Length: 129
Image 1 (cartoon, rainbow, N blue to C red):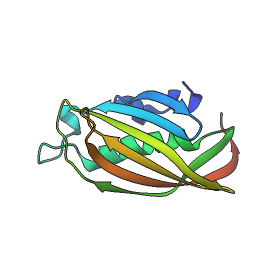
Image 2: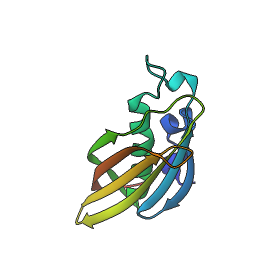
Image 3: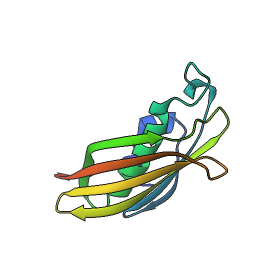
Image 4: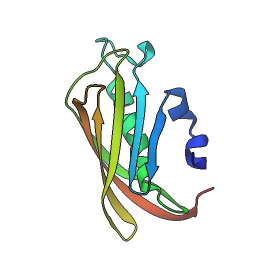
């Protein structure tokens, strides 16, 4: 596991598991817990976003330079509940100069699409580490 994820206390607190970490491609999973539910007893959208954002971060940090989000948006397509396993799969669409575009699909344990996320990255001149 990369240093970036070893130091990521937020993702660890949410129980996220990195399933795949490759340049431009990442898969991260998370089991929905009771404390992740909103007032309607469905998964809080912010936590679905957090899962997608973590996969995005892994996929766009491809080298020794720090790459951060320049923006992101999400479309929620299906609600989920406690006990379900969500999986975010991030894929690089294009990198041009310091800017990148990444798509993340969040699915549930049966493969139904829960959300679609699009992230825009900016690569900095800072070295990771």
